Length: 421
Image (cartoon, rainbow, N blue to C red):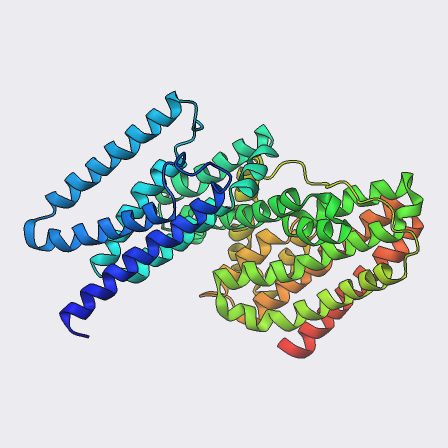
């Protein structure tokens, strides 16, 4: 491609970017009378081409031309906006004004040779503009504590994580503040996604959705809430049992995901036991879904808050304790000490021991031992949730939930023995 063809290609891309954004803006404003819109398809196309043409000129006469043109365009669009606002012909939003300036910038970027980047951001811009009703709906349904939770999520990840020291402290140099807090952020992010997945679709989408994505946030919370609900709504036992099993089954792929992010090698060894445990848990849930005669109303989401700083700090302290005990017990008792710790940790939480053993398997612990410990923790946790369902939901819940979780625990331990060892 010679230089002239290259210029034509870049300017064509700048024009296409403007037209793409203009089509979306024109469609959004299609009900507005002709001549009353700030800009339409042609205007946005020309703005993109203007940015591209001036970017070409700036290579000959200096970049100040591009800057002056941007200021002039901003002034012109602002004037039109103010006039329309005074005449009562426009709303208070400045989306079209900002979009026009962004179109100019993307057109200039394309003309400078960064066509792929400019085109990608043009597509993202068009998507954001076209999803206005959806985005506004999501914002409207947010609760104050959820907004604060989002800010807290940014606080623990963007603000706190980068300033923590990345080196070992304490006995055996087992405590690395950066690694511990990075794992806290990882678990918080996964739970955050699970919470808002249920929040966006709503529990009205069904117990299936609530169980799957609620389990991504906290399978224990789903188990506890649904088990208690069984006591007062006996006609919903099959449906609620299905929700519990779906939530508990989701713990296993989550476990592989968490361990694989810390140490990709461990995910390959852990995958088969996790698949066996998930299938043994999901299979009865599918049977309940296919056979239950009473569909009932959708269950209420058991998830109350996506993130609490006290919870995050508590998990961080638990993780630090498990990591420290893991190294100490390994030095004192070898592999058997690590496996005993895994069994004890799994009673309360799987994430902490999963992260700890995945981290240890990178240098000081055999991969097979780490996988075995994670499966033991998952098996213990499943048994605890089966007992929880039996205690709060009654004997029927024990049969429908406890037995599948018992089978899952046995299946996982058997598979890790035959497959890993």
